[in-house]
Image 1 (cartoon, helix red, strand yellow):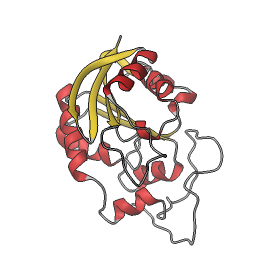
Image 2 (image 1 turned 120 degrees about the horizontal axis):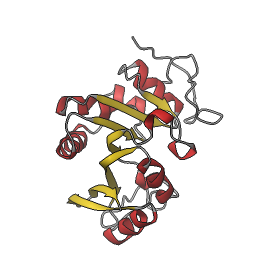
Image 3 (image 1 turned 90 degrees about the horizontal axis):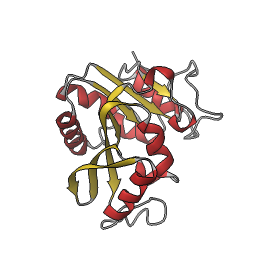
Image 4 (image 1 turned 90 degrees about the vertical axis):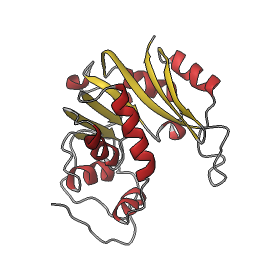
Length: 211
């Protein structure tokens, strides 16, 4: 069961600090990512690639999607598992509401993992994914380091990076772009190292492991 409400204007971000206590209301259908999903304008091709590469790291274990947005990757991942456990976190309240109400993803939480890892997520996941996130983060090393705390022993992270070789002319100063050197530096500061590079082109897709 899900709800869509029509309103004239709505803020993208919920006022207040993200917590696990979601407001008791429907999601706002005017949030751009939700509008794209409902209109079928998401990126199924990239999602298919991401979940295939995720499954090559670990299939059938536990998956945490940090910055999961509307939850679409978690839904798609189930077709390449099945994963025993799928969880997600995002700090945009309406995206978490959408993931729960539209997709039925009860394990998606409204939180910024840099503010503290839930106790049941510490050292708990076989794969931690950050897809289409790193270009929007001001302090990438802190997000990587916080996410690392969710890795079980021997587990890996799956991270995509917007490539500095293919900058978006519509977002020249808003996104953070990456090359292999800057990726290596961010990983080093977070206590991680490159494990594998799946692809390097318009985006760079990597797996990372603890140093």
